[in-house]
Image 1: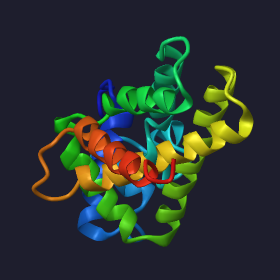
Image 2: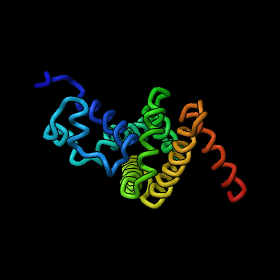
Image 3: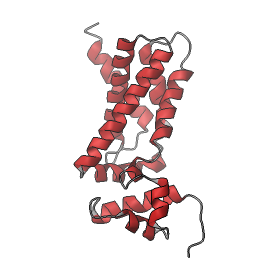
Image 4: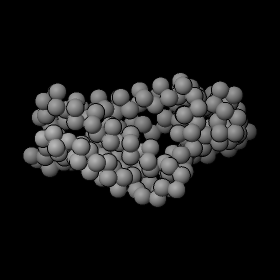
Amino acid sequence: MVRWEPGAPQRLQRAALELFTERGFEQTTAAEIAQSVGLTERTFFRHFSDKREVLFYGQERLVRTFVEGVESAPPGASPMEMVTAALRSGAGFFTDEHRPHSRTRQSVIDENPALQERELHKLATLGVTLATALQARGVDRATAEVAAQTGMTVFGIAFARWIREGETRSIADIETDVLRELRSLVAPAA
């Protein structure tokens, strides 16, 4: 019997990603993931409802960091300034040490339509939560929705650039560039 070790969710997450990469998502079972780190299938299901969720572990923390960014924006900040604060806060979630994991995780997601759908759902939930946080700061609903969805678009583009092979800039720097591109697009229309 294996002696209890802390960090089971993280160990299961690393093992799952490795097995998904080697064998494919569909060909890997929860039992195999658990066994690869000396745990039981029952332990796996104590931490994750299914094998998809192992790829989305930590989502609540990411959502929380975005909301904290909105809440920490200075009084009188515009909706886009609050969204920018949320993006800055969320950028701390994506460190250089985390980039290889994110690249591998995304490659697994890109190969499976059900995982792609789950990833889109995650981003949609993040957008709704961001809009709710903006409304709590006094932004009207329509403006909050537009600002939040704009923020999610900026985040999505920045994330895709951040995980590209050879990319070395921080996600915060990339988000700044994407926001600059956005401003140049809308400036003539204003």
